[in-house]
Image (cartoon, rainbow, N blue to C red; front, side, top):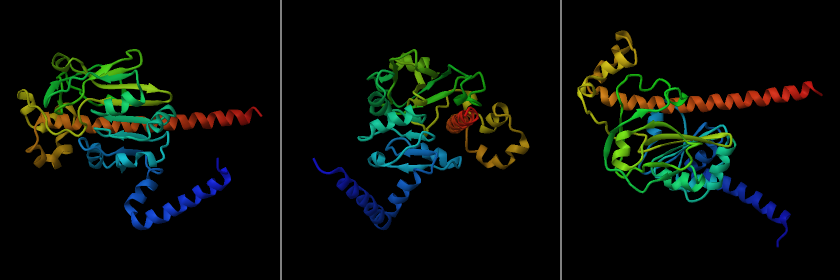
Length: 299
């Protein structure tokens, strides 16, 4: 067995050399690794899903890393970690578990059910081994009071959810801990399971998972309502006035109500997730401050 102090010096030197080399030869990779510590949102790139494209639209900053880089980064418990489908991370599973246990927020999509959640958090949810087709299903809101769904699906109509070819249906293993936010009777009749969006807590943190891809590729225009102009959705369901929508007239001509509803739902949804995590982080910080103040007052 070697001397620990000797090796400690070697590791410290190696870190300094790597810092110099990466900043010179791989500046973009270097900035990614440095920025992770400052960012509130960390996204693991996927070959099938691209949550980051929605965040670009709503101008939410994030750090994008490749799955092969995941084991190199540091995570903080005040961050949101988004793992795009397929979730092909091969190293760092313990890091994900620790991140959530300490208060981090994990958001995963589609194949990450099998590749991440089953491996890191066994016993909660599972892939039922019945992949979907390229399909669209009507969905029902199970818990309208949940903060993640605030401002979504205000009408009595059933929204349509797009399923990517070979999406993974969610089988719930722990019905006590796992909450279904959005379900689909049509999904169950076709593919054996009805959950579409689920959430559960582990330690101080939260996991949110959804079937199919977050960045929608298409919408299913099933009825007359879906085929009407997006302006109807903006006015009737979002409550926007003519003055508020006058700059969107050219856009309304290109988008149907069904398309607008699907896109708005996903956009608002990710906004809600980020807002909720920021609130939780602030609450935890305030509790720590109060605990410290109470401790000082009792001295």
